[in-house]
Image 1 (cartoon, one colour):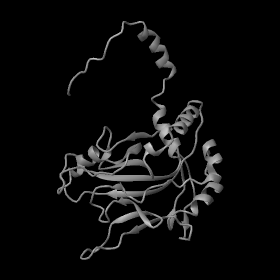
Image 2: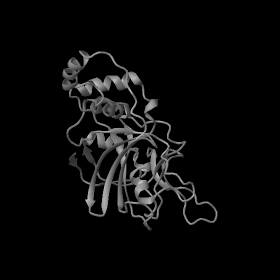
Image 3: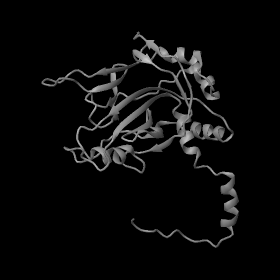
Image 4: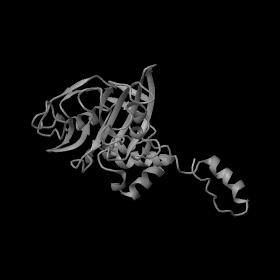
Amino acid sequence: MLLETGEPRFVRESESSVLKFRQEEKPDGQGVGRRLLWQGADPAFELSWWCGTCPLLFKRLEGATETLSLPEMQQTLNSGIDRIEGSVLEAFTAILPEGTHVPLLLRVQPKLVYPGGHGDYFSEEQVDTWSTSGFWGLPEYPQTPYYRTWQAPVDASEHAFEFVVPMVPPNWNESSRVEEYAQELMNSSTPTAVAVSILDVCSPAVDRGTDYYVHWGLTHFLLDGHHNMQAAAEAHRLAQASDVERLIELRAQPQARRIASGPR
């Protein structure tokens, strides 16, 4: 759900600009280098190719090794904000890449997915449109777990997908903090995460798959809120009141082991 949109603001690069969207140095004989998100001096993510006809991509690289949390913002973000806060924008603007940024305040319900697993965009929707790699014979591989949050049609021939991509994988998070935030979520807490986002519109040049359409990819690279995001993704696994009521009925039944249904 979109809660608020702020005025576009141009950010100039400075010594504190930790993040940069830049081309990699061109290899000999090639016209352009890879499109990358840099974290400091190191490439953190490889992004969709420049042509606009290649598949959507965010691939974690060796430079993505730390979050970009700001200690002075922790209390405000953990408490949650219900409108765009100038103090939060100013604090994170200092580390953002140069360019025009549009502040958005969103409410999301994240689902954690793994490459090749159920719900993986790259091995499901993307393969349906582009098929697999002509060279590798495999889907694109993002090299990171990520969160899916929202999707919707743009029109009859275009569809938008939204992703939240952590700078470090969820298994790097402290489990005790994730559990703490999950409990707070059960008590109606609404913590806020911060991300820098890009929109890629990818239109296949040829029809190689079974479902040809244009893919809009809104990708949020998570800067602050890694523990909160994982807690929100796991919160739906916790028991609800209706589950407890059902359990009373189930607990009265005789014990029985699960019988596998076999391959589908």
